[in-house]
Image (cartoon, rainbow, N blue to C red):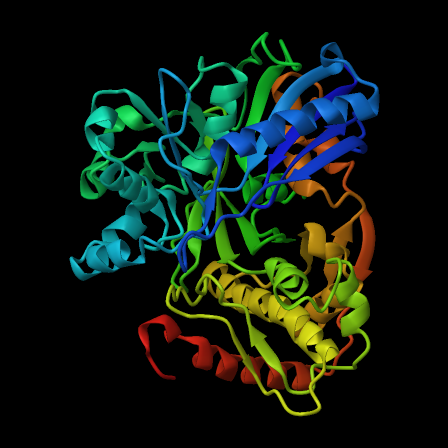
Length: 499
């Protein structure tokens, strides 16, 4: 069996990648799907469109690679996390659109839970801060707003899942309703310490246990794809949320190793081993993966709008034609000319956690050009990541010697150099930047014996380029101080608060 197939269902597109035994990409297919914004702060996807896109690119990837289903040893699945779907068990039909992780409609619900004094207990049990980002309040919202849903859920007629659970249900024609521990740990319903759903949290959010999937290991043979599909008979053997999969794909297996993924958002994770480190700096404690019965944990900082700010320059402002054009445009100026762009389009994530912040551009003058805006947009990605690193180093007590990077925007050399300059540590880009899909492939391949162990995988990891800090540290620190001033202008905007 010469290949592993990774299904990488992201926020804006579905991808399928075939990897060979050397961990190299053999074939890839990708398809974007619709982003829906029915109200300000709401973000939805069509679950059936996601499914159609994912299965079509899987079959397309096999065709592009000249590969038959019988040539695939296993499937690994990685996914946008926290996005919430509820469907009918009898028909497999969703009862409501998927509520995307970026969606802020349940911010008020979170405020009420905080006011009632539940935030500390939720963080202690789940490792998460109480925020609309996570799945639990989205699930409660669907059960409360779709007529009859709550009664049907309690009767066992409905199923809840994050995207991984939805895809596995569809791939197995309803035979399996499962999620792995990494995805479960993002729901506000999973207890980090017991490794299972938490009855106290289920009661608090009024979620019936009957609607929940079984929590399984991240690397294990779970079942086979249904005979009704073009992938018939392939074992499904790996599952991990996208950021945990990237951490595994980057081979950040040892305590203290960290990576940052530059996707729609930015996500920095640091492995903490078998210890669930409680954050004192508004980061998240999360499950990295579960191998057998052993949970490995990580600290995580999540930036909601990373590469999505470049999409906004393309689709919203129209100042670039393709996302790749941003580097060339931004490089036309040596700096942003004092312009700062705070991309709080969906609020601010870690370490600020302000769901009411909104996007802001400050420092504009008559001399400001599209190039300055583009440069400020790239700076905003790097500046948000620098905020994460400060918090992570304070929590872990470990000063990073390097930051491993991946994701689409990691291909942007200007951004990576800016990142190294702001952090003051080397930024290391691997030869294979498809580390999210690669991590899912690794988890699946280990389960079926395609690879013999993590030592074999670690030996495959290679550096493509290393970006050393080159900027004057005084200037970099001054830029970060001005960034903090810009953040104050964006804070609380939706609620009419002033800096």
